[in-house]
Length: 198
Image (cartoon, rainbow, N blue to C red; front, side, top):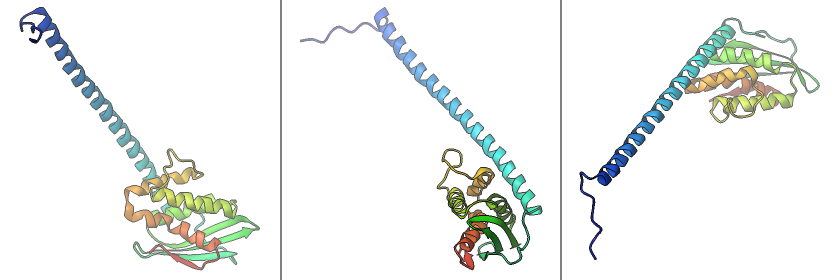
């Protein structure tokens, strides 16, 4: 049995098939170009958003480093603990006054890098008036965020302004600086005298 006759290259039927093939190739190329354009636009938006966040992050860090909130000792605190980050040289002492189960007052003293001091400053603002259980939840959420296990954009959390420290992920060596005060307050709430990020 012989195969069906093929239309001659110059025939209208052959041209139609050829045109359809060309149209399909052009459609695929255009789709790829459109997808590439959308990808590029998305990348630009992401970079812009990251840049915006990065600027805000820097502003907040500088403000809290220059003017740390609650940077003082509490006389006769109910709890206190010392925190040490040997990698960066950060040294903090956290003081806590409790009223029953409530963190009535919290403060810190010490020396360290801008991120360490800013994190401690914002932590004290956040924890005042919280229960010990709420403080523990915030410690857990903050630690998971700075270590990349909590996405503040999509995961449920109670971090509020502390979300700004998600930017620490861009500088892995600074994660311990940002989390030192949190580990120290966690230790104090558990009756421990000192903690190290080492």
